[in-house]
Image (cartoon, rainbow, N blue to C red; front, side):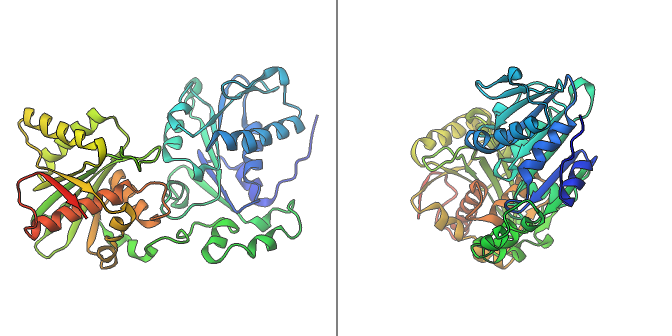
Length: 408
């Protein structure tokens, strides 16, 4: 049986691309989910396993799965006997290909068997881990698998821009505007234009990567001039800070953030960050190693609520390791957003430079660019703590004797 399926030009380019990683970036209603599902069905091979990912269980059930089912039914490859819905949908198509549906509520739950292909629907609403975990599984039958992502952009600081917007190796990007979809209602584009102002219209209707509307600081503060390669040798004071992201205001998926900060004789600040998700014992070990390599004059650790126990563990275990970490426990009493905004004058003057080539530092800068709209703000919070401790030590407000500081 032969069917004719209508695609608009950008959908067709995406469908025919042989790039290893493909991003279909579109405005609202540009046919992103439709082409993602259709492309997966067309690429799926008999006896192979594929994954279709959605940001949340709700979106999976409301959008991703129903769209896939409708297209598979239209193409005559939907077999009700091959469907298992619990705990997540697994569909054996009439072509003999198995498609696993998973949500990125917890990216770790996306782990599983080796895969021949992955489709991430609304990828910009997922954490980067959803991408990183899945590309490591693209090795079924000893062959390199592919990954496609369909999404509306979420700013220049988002991981989807880093991957698809900067022409990374083995990647291809396809832009589709809302008005490019000829299958939408006649006035759909015009109606949305009346609701979306300025940069938001470029993002939501044009499918373009732009500075996030409402970001605290302009994008021109974050040019290539902010990066450096090697630490200068004339640092006069060094501090580190740890935001464990385990307090009451922590969000699911938050990173623990270490920031190292140095000041040279000219007053220039130099910064490097390490952001990751790891259990408490690993956090303590990282703190001890960072103290050994960076040799800070002070090491700020947020101690709000039970996080004080973590600071005590760092002190205890570093003493046992004969490399005492000079821990200053910061009891933060001021709202986090207010504290992070204190970085503004330093960023505006270009007074903080960031060490390039380090994933954690790049993630910190992404969070700064999108603040306060970024999904996470662990890095900026740790940077503010490192800077505040440095200022207080430099001005003699606190001595070099570690202890508890009530931060205001």
